[in-house]
Image (cartoon, rainbow, N blue to C red; front, side):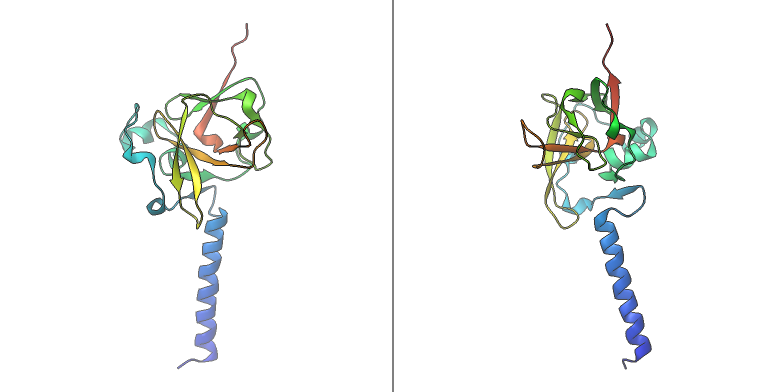
Amino acid sequence: MLTRRTFGLASLRTIGSLGLAAAAASGLRGPLAYADEEKMTTATDTKFEVTKTPEEWRRILTPEQYQVLREHGTERAGTSPLDKNYADGTYDCAGCDLPLFSSETKFNSGTGWPSFYKPLDNAVGDTVDKSFFMTRTEIHCRRCGGHLGHVFEDGPPPTGLRYCMNGVALKFVPKASG
């Protein structure tokens, strides 16, 4: 029998579930969000030059790097010091040290993540990501398969692309002086 009390509890459960779903979709799950791996065509089926077991990756990566690079997580916007870094150099994969992006292609997208309009030649690969109720193009390191971020078609000239990368998946290597 439906009473005000049971109706109210059912409504609260529904609202709570919707709130959790909305929070998950918007990335409000703490410092890192995770993609639904069942809906992602991952790069894990591909053979990469650098391969390690999960235990080996955990030994060389910080927990945050592991969550992003190996579990397709996303760091919270505005948390990476690399977002506001504009020094000359390269942004390399935090997993395997492959140079991925040049500082010459970095721009301030206003999104809170390091953004580039073009990767270095033969540096990244892409896969289809159908997580969070949308289809996006995921970008990964072509050498180790580490998840880096996504690419969008709202970037500046000359490419019109915005490679929106997780700073924790990158390490900045300053240009050698001399």
